Length: 194
Image 1 (cartoon, rainbow, N blue to C red):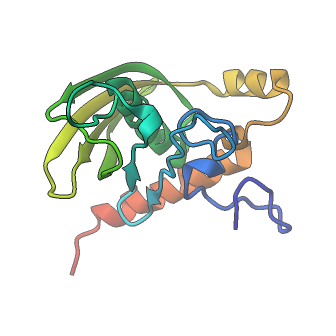
Image 2 (image 1 turned 60 degrees about the horizontal axis):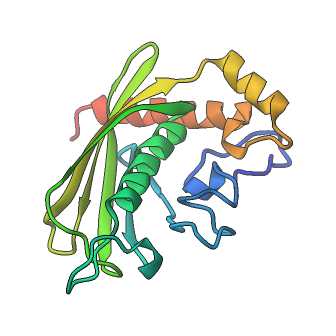
Image 3 (image 1 turned 30 degrees about the vertical axis):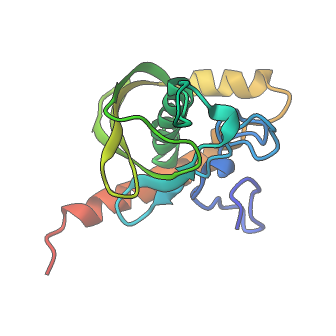
């Protein structure tokens, strides 16, 4: 079920992909935007992390040379979105405060890469994340860390009032469903296995 719509029973289902949270014309994950990266950022409910594969296309070309390489800005946008969407998937609405990237190796166009993002710390007003982008051989191409400003509920309410339409990821029922899911993931991960 798509969590963009409120189910008949009145309860929201927690989000699973970036399209559950963002508008169709989003620069990174919007499927209706011709210039979008068209990334489908998937939440791994087992680990409470984001894991997905992506292939950059020709319009994301960057460095010149014999090999066709991805523009560093396109990579930065994808890793920013992966870490920001992760925050949404665990029930927080955030804005990027700081994003740090280290480019270890060049990323070729049209080759599949694996992105993995996870939470490191949640504080009262900040959330901290890390992410990696690896090639099919498992080599790290880019590593990233982010610091995110947690938007207070009053700001989310104001954004919703000022918007022409309710932003999917800002629906209070969806935020609560995502928070509840993440609490159970954390609880399960803390229990000893066996």
